[in-house]
Image (cartoon, rainbow, N blue to C red; front, side):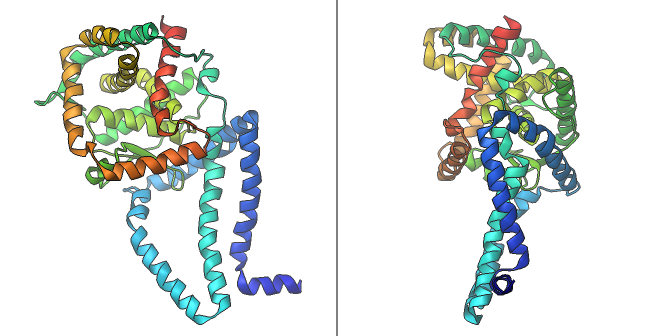
Length: 368
């Protein structure tokens, strides 16, 4: 008892509680990583309701709380440095309590990650959940899948508006798009009961234009439960990124799987533009893989794409030239790559493009 009182002089009670929960969370994290069935259970019955509550709470805030916190980092850093210097000048007890408080913040981030999002990296893979065979794909399989995507894009193209630059245009508001995507997720969940259905919103990033230099079109923040979208990107990327980030919000953590679920959800939408965006986004990944596999088949598949969609892609390439050579993107890519690898995605940021394998597997299982 005397030792506990002595410890309290240097370590706040709140910090002690945080440290205890951190230890429990670390044990839980180890179990999640080692047991797929437990990860499935935890992600669906524990993490999903928690993410939903967080998303509902932050949905009342008209701006991205995560973006506001990031923007204010310099201010909080300056405040903490000032407090730290004052504590260091005062005495050892004050310094110890300050350091414990800083460590508690780090621990709290880890706790939040474990309880809300970490299990998504260890669940049964999406191909197994949808009973598909994910195998190494051939050039011909890529070609056949590309043609299937092309046919759907060509059929949808007459229903899409294009501006003078050739870029496809979303003919409704950003918030309407958010509602349409949530409706599509509801339909997806009825067809594939692997996700919870809940109505949330997509937060537009206020500083989207400078944020584009990171080459990030959207980001889900587990600390606030928000799906944040870079609205500076062309409309079809905004829509497909919105579907991607909502997949993260619903517990699909792996990047290739989030891309794939976003594609499946777009197909369930009643809205032609969301369907078109989903097809065109995945088409680009499949065509990139086909180009590497067989350039002749790539040329053949490219020639089948309608002129409207072709110029939409050209417009996107022209848009991206301004942001292509960016040191900021190198830093953000390095951070994201390390985060993904630390969570079991050995391919790192390359895992985004692995949606190609899943798309081909879907084509072989349900379309061919």
